[in-house]
Image (cartoon, rainbow, N blue to C red):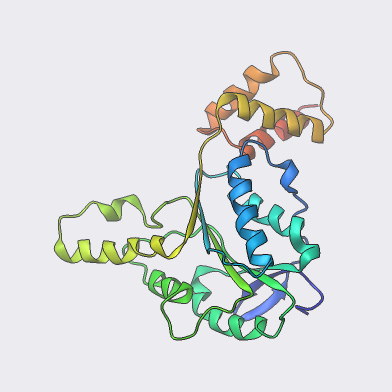
Length: 244
């Protein structure tokens, strides 16, 4: 199965193929050129058997973190790049995945943890942290870990508000998870100009001509959603299509 496909997900400690993988391409992503460049350099080093770093993409929701990972796979899949998405609650399954993918010497695997975030009651961060680095079993050379999060330090803000020495030690351990990633790439809310460029892109994709005051309506829509992002731009254009 792994030999024939390129996109998979871990579910109940088994590997299943992803049937409808996104077709997004790097050229479709607007306003994140610097992030694309950093990730491409690291990925090309990985594919060339050169030193590379595990990656954390963090920042605003809907600003392209997951889309960038999908586009990266589409860009390099012909060079043997594959992806396995792993839920954080199956973090310990990663050791079985290590054993599985080690047999595929000519393929490179992104082990993808999407939208990770932990709170003070969540013990899974220790398992996740251990799975990245620190155990006796090393990550195979044909595996690169990429994680996305809305939090830079991967823990909820309220966990940081404490005067307890015990809690401070707990927070220190949780924040050390952040240090496990050698390459940390941030994503910010696009400015108005970039947001409108993304809206224009989706207008073209959905073959919808610009209409009077489209830009003002697009900005007002973003205000109603509480954010400017690629996701909001797409939602705006589709909402206009539904009104036709």
